[in-house]
Image 1 (spheres, rainbow, N blue to C red):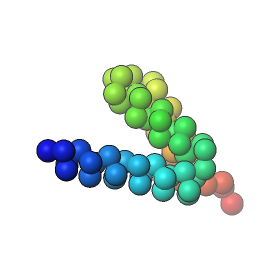
Image 2 (cartoon, rainbow, N blue to C red):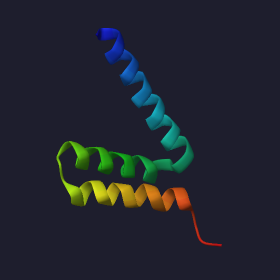
Image 3 (tube, rainbow, N blue to C red):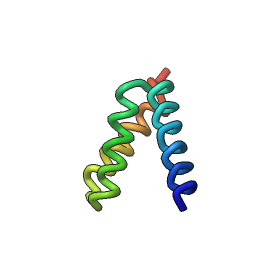
Length: 62
């Protein structure tokens, strides 16, 4: 069981680093909002995080 917890923690840290590298601080804010909203069962907060991440992933209109 501790190995599974260590592996999942390493995956989460690697994913956060990937988001920060690709999308910068705004990506981390969106990811945190999404995570906090899901854990707190708050649709408004999780939706705000999802919108921030979606806007970052789609990029500016050309």
